[in-house]
Image (cartoon, rainbow, N blue to C red):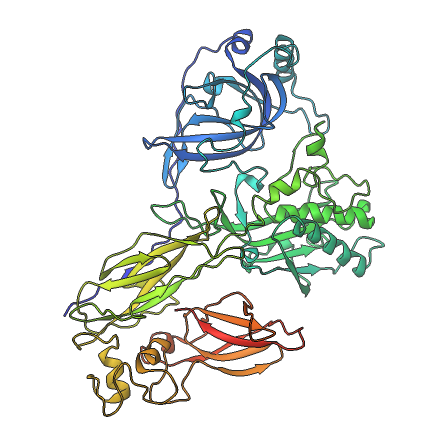
Length: 632
C-alpha cells in the first residue's frame, strides 16, 4: 500500500528581469561606413524574434522593411541578426547590439558574417534611428535628413554597387521560424474559434450612427468589412445581436472571445482630432515551463497569445463617416486591428504597396470601401492561415492500481484526440510529465499511465480545479502548425485487489455488487453484462454507468429543434456526429467537454452520467440523424 502525492498545475506566464549595459565605440566616418558595408538601407522595423543557437546563446532577428535601398540588392524585407534578447525566462543583453524598436525607422549599415547572416557593422553605432519632424510633413528632423542626404550622395542614390543580400529575406535561415510582420504592438495573438471551424461572435452597438446612415446601411457596412477579411483567411463571423454596451467598447475587459463593434463614440474613447476610429484587442499568454508553447497555438513556427476580446469604436460625428463606402473602409481597417494587425506604415510614404493597404494609417476615402490591398492578405494569413491550426482538449484520468499494473484495454489510458479541419495525420507532443505516483508513455495518439505501485483509494480531485496526482502537458502538430497546449491530469488513484487486475476497482464492485471479488453467479465479472443492456461491466465502469440499471447508459434522451440532450460523463470528451443518409457522418459541431456538473458529482467516484445539452445543431436539411461518440 502506498500513500499518494498531489501537486498543483504548473502552467506559468514566464517573465524575466531586464538588465542594461552599454559599450564604447569609435564610430566610423560616414564615407568609411558606406565603404566597409556590404549593404546600406533606410528601413522600418516590423518584427523582432529571439532564439537560442546550439551553444545556448541568445540572438535576436530583426525584420526590416526596406524603405530605401542605398547600397546593395535587397528583398522587400531584410533580416538582421544581433546578440542578446529574451527566450522563455532567460534574457541576454549585449551592449554593442542595436536598440531596434518595432515601428521605428533606421539608417542601417550591414555586413555579412561567416555564417551568412547580416549584422550591423558597428552595432548600435551603425543603426541610426531616424525621427520624423511630423507625420503630416513626412520629413525627418534636420540633422537626420542631413545624414541621409550625405549617404545618398555617397551612394549616388543607391547606384553604387554593393552585395546581393536577397537571400536574407525575412525568413529564418534555419527554416524554424518566419518573422511575423505587421502585428499589433509587435505581439502576436489570435482568436481560436477559426481553428475549430467556428465563427467569431460579434456584437454591434448602434445606439448612435453617423448622420444619414441607417441601421441597415451600417450593418451592411459591418458585413462588408468582415467579409473582406473572411475571404482571404479561415475566419468566419456570427452576428450575436445589437447591444448598448454602456461604455466604450475599448473599456470592456470581459474575455468572452467576442468582437464588439461600436458605431459611435458616446463615451469619449477617441480624444484626438480627426480620428475616425480605433480598434484593438485584449490577449493573454501562458507559456509552459521548459517549452515555448503558448495558449494561442503555433502558426508556421510562430507562437501566439490567445485573443480574449476585440473591439472597434467609430467617431460617428465625423462627416467622413456619412459616406457608406468610407464607413465600410474604416470598419474594415479597425477590424483589422482587432484581428491583431498593425498599420502597414505609420508615416507618409510613396510605396504603393503600403499606401494602398487597408491597414495604411490614413483613410483613403476614395470609394474603395472594404477592399483589401496587396499588402493585407499575406499579413492576416500569418495569423489565420487556410491550413488551420489543430486543436485538442484538456483530459482527465481515473487510475486503477494493483499489485501488478493493470493490463486491460481502456484502463489507465486515453486517446489524446487531436483534431484538424484539413488532415488526420497529426502528431502528439508531450512535455513536463510529472512522476509523483507513476509515469506516462506515448504510443501514437494513445497516452498510458502506469502507477508505480498499489495505492489505497484516494479522493477524487475536482477536474474544474488545478490539482492532480500526476500530469503531463501536450499539444498536437500537423507538421506545420501546432495546437495550443493542454493537459492530461490524473484525478484519482484507486485499488483493485484482484490478481491479475480486471481493471475494475474494489470500491466500484463493492458498491454495485456488494463484494470486491468478481463472481459468475451475479454476473459481476468484468466481461459479464449484469443488466442486459449490451455493455459488459468493464465498459459500464469506463462509461460511468450503473451496471445494475439498464436505464443508466450513454444515450440521447431528448431532441427538440436545434437542441439535443444525452447522458454523459463530466469532463470526458465527446463528438456529436451528424448525417443525412446514415452512411456519411461528420462532426457537428466541434468536439466538446461537458463541465456543467456540481462539485459533489465531479468529486464523487461513484457518480453516474449527467444530462448534457448541445445546441445550435444544423437542422436545415430535410432529414438529419445524430449520434454521440465518447472519445476513448
